[in-house]
Image 1 (cartoon, helix red, strand yellow):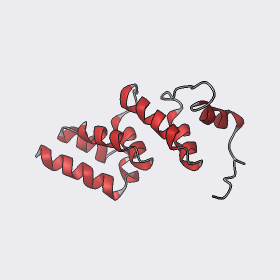
Image 2: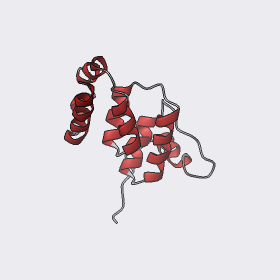
Image 3: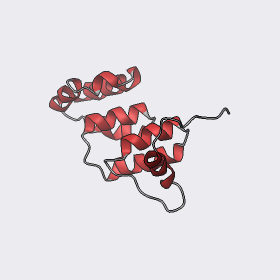
Image 4: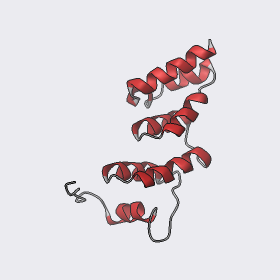
Amino acid sequence: MAEIPIEDVSYEDFGLLLSTIYPKTVFPHDKTVEKLLEMADRFIMPSVIGHVEYHLLHNTKIENEKLMWMADAYGMKELLEKTVRQTNTIEKAKLLKNSPEYQKLSKDAKATVLDRIMQLI
């Protein structure tokens, strides 16, 4: 594997990334999850994505639409399943459709949402 340059990453952000796995684990929180996901994806650190997914499954206040986008974008299957299940009314489906995150979802995620909506009607 070739080297991955870290030129445009701040010292603080890179420290945050590494602190999720070494030496004393610092757990993700709602203010750090997006940056952690971005860097974990860039630096190929699936264990960090796992830490973030656990937080998002159990301890977050982030709205469902944004969670769905993050789950889709970073391959967090369990979180995607949970967010799709939580789209359990037509009103919530309309809220998702009108959110900026909906446009960012992959075709597969949109198909999963459509399957869920079909269960509701």
